Every structure is written in structure tokens, then in C-alpha cells.
Image 1 (cartoon, rainbow, N blue to C red):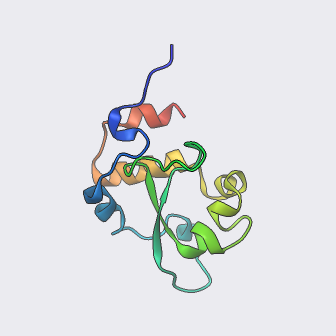
Image 2 (spheres, rainbow, N blue to C red):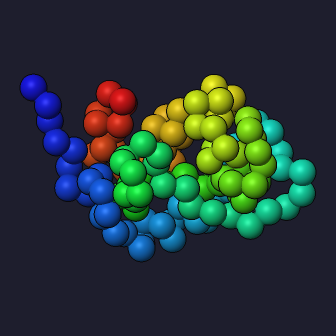
Image 3 (cartoon, rainbow, N blue to C red):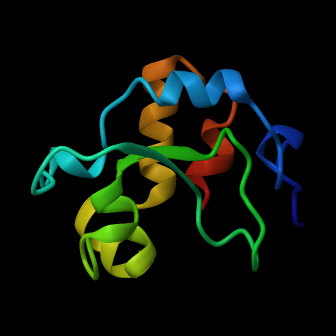
Length: 114
């Protein structure tokens, strides 16, 4: 039986308050591989939602520009998600880590199944 995700995790859900909290963190990938120089922080929405469709604002990671888009293959998530996840961890596990730091437990079971 297929269970729909909670409304807050569905495509297009907006939460400026949550985005503001996540923006206070540093790049999740820089912990493993520091960027060559200081970069502006981006909030990356979970990939794999669907063609041209943005994930919920609750499914975001703080990534510097280098690890988000400009770093190239194996450095930037948008240059190759599978390779990036092998190096830094799955997007879901990193989102769960952010949720744990923010004290959000409600979506833990849904994200852990992915």
C-alpha cells in the first residue's frame, strides 16, 4: 500500500520560517570537503521530486555555491546526484540531520524509509 507523504512534505509547500532556520547552518558538504574558498550559502531542495517541480521547503539542505552548483562532478550536487551522495551522504539522511538539530521529529519515519 502506498502512503502519501504528509501535506507539509509534498511538492510546493512553502515555509519561509523553516528556510530561515536552515539558512543559519553552514554547508553540510564542507564538513567533509571544504570549499576552495568561502562561498555564499544556498538552500538546496531535495532532488528527484519530478521534472521541474520543487520539493517542499521542509526538504532543504544548506549547501555553499561550490557544493550546490558550481563545483563540477563529484563536488556539486547538481552536477551528479548519485556521485555526490556517495561522497557526502544521501539527501534524506542530511535533511534528517538538520531536522534533528532543529528538534523536528514528526517527519523522521517518512524520510527514513526513502
